[in-house]
Each structure stands twice: as structure tokens, then as C-alpha cells.
Length: 375
Image (tube, rainbow, N blue to C red):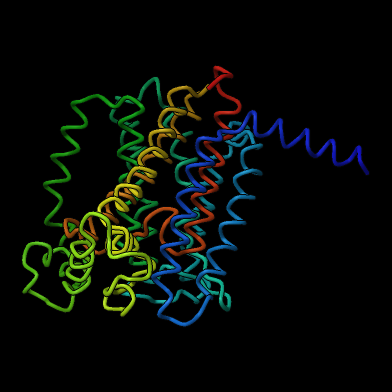
């Protein structure tokens, strides 16, 4: 028995010596502060249900981080076509299974009793994998028109499945942002970047036509809150909460907007506003600082990775977290539309928590197998 525990102790020491402890510590600090904020945000609900779910997701995510870090993702890169098809089936499962739960204008969730699964969250990981391998295969002819068309179809088909089956604009934009970041990092020529930007501007009126009425309103109220006071209410209350916190905040469990449930969806979309009201500007800076260090570490590992595929996977993961962070905080301060993207590791959400720890485990695994060994 003593020999068994000795082996376990040795294995743990070896893992800690090889794993990316910077990522792990930053993730645990972020999720720990997030748990504090969620406790405060849900205290008025008179239930610990949210805390139990978030803690369970944290533990599952931690296990996923450790297990995934041992998997050499390069070994499954050749399965990218099959994974691409699997992702489309997964994203379409909301329609096939018939249990998509319509929430706040979209149908992003599949529910099995109290457990909710968001297919698009899992799909983001698969999308990063498939696009990374596709880019790796085309790297020598990336700046040829057929290659760009292939890659664009790869991204547009996946994003279209997200939007058609879930009507989740925020998640759709996340997929497209990941694509833009990854193809730029892969070495797309500047001329194509300018052409792409021009096409996006030109296609904006067409895209606007396909948006739902409530989606258009969420964008318009950024510029004119009086257009629809009910829609603007969320962002307005968020800004009031942030302003009330001033430098050091009202104090833990002392935020009026938070504790009296004036601030809507305070444990999910507007958890950053809870940090601002109760911990002030300093609390907001801690949140931003932790996530910034986390994202910078991911990009650092990307540039030290041992293969093109691993490099692009890290870039995609970093881009995914960067987009979510920017949009969520932008929602809270009133510069981006309220489109339901949560703040990574801080907002309540089991799927988001497990997904984030999983992708961080992938990055840790890349670092463990990358070069040089001292990173």
C-alpha cells in the first residue's frame, strides 16, 4: 500500500513539473473569484443550487484539464473531415432531438432534467481542431483563391449551422471571429485581409436583413436607448451597478443592484457588473488582469509549439477566449449588444466552465510536448 501511494505521489510530482502551472493557477484563481461573485449574485434566490452546479462543473473541468493534457492532439489531426461532419451533426442536434430549450430569444440548449448542454460550446473545440488541420494542409498555398474559398466555406457552413439551429447570434459571431484570427495567424496576405474587410462591410446590409427583430433592436439601443427602454434596461442597470462601485466597491454582499435583483441575469451575462458594484474598479481590474494573463499565456504557448497544427489550435483557443471576454465586458459597459455571451471562468454555466478547462488542458498538453522543455 505504501508503495502505491509513493507511485501516486511521484506521478503527481512529475505531472506538476511538466504541466503548464501558469495556466492552471490562473484558471483556478479566475474560477475561484467567479464562485465568490456567483454566490453573491444568487444569494437573493435563496438556493445554493447554482453554487453546487458551478462547483461540480469546476471539479469536472479540472479533471478534464488533467486528462486532456495527456492526449497528443496531433495524433487525431488526420480525422479532421470526420470531426467536421460530427460537429455539424452535433450543432444540428437541437433540431433532431427536439429538446432545444428556447431561452432569451435563442434555442442553444439541450436539457436532460436539471442538466443543460450547449452543443455550440463543445462545437467550438471541434471547429478549432478541424480548421487548424485544414489550414495546416493548405499552408503552402494559403494565399491562392481556391484555398481561401475552401477555408471560408469551412467556417461559413459551421457558423450557419450554429445560427440556423440555435438562432444564437453571439455564438455565431464567436465562430467567425475564431476563423478570422486563425487565418490571419496562419499567414493570410494583407491584400486578402483588406478584400475580406471590404466584403464584410458590403455584406452588412444583407446580413442585417436576416437578423431577427429583437437582434436588430439589441444593436440599435446601443446608440439610442430610448428606442426600446425594455431592451436597453439590461445594459442600463449594468452601467448603474458599475458606476455605484466606484474605486473599491460597496462591499461583498452589499451591492444594491445585485442583492435586490435589479440587475438582470446577474450570475451569467452580467457577472462583471457584480464585480464592479461590490468590489469596484479594483475588482474589475482583477477580473480583466486574470483573463488577460490567461490569454497572453495561451498565445505564448502557441508561438513555442512544436507543429503548425498545435500553433493554430492555441491561436484559436486564445481567440475564442479573447472574443468572449471583450464582448461580455462590452455588454456590461454598453459598447457591444447584449447577445448572451458569458465571461469565461467567471459567469455561471457548467458547459462553459468545462469547455474552458478542457481547452486549457489542450494548451497545457501542447506545452508539455512542445519545445523547449523549460517553458
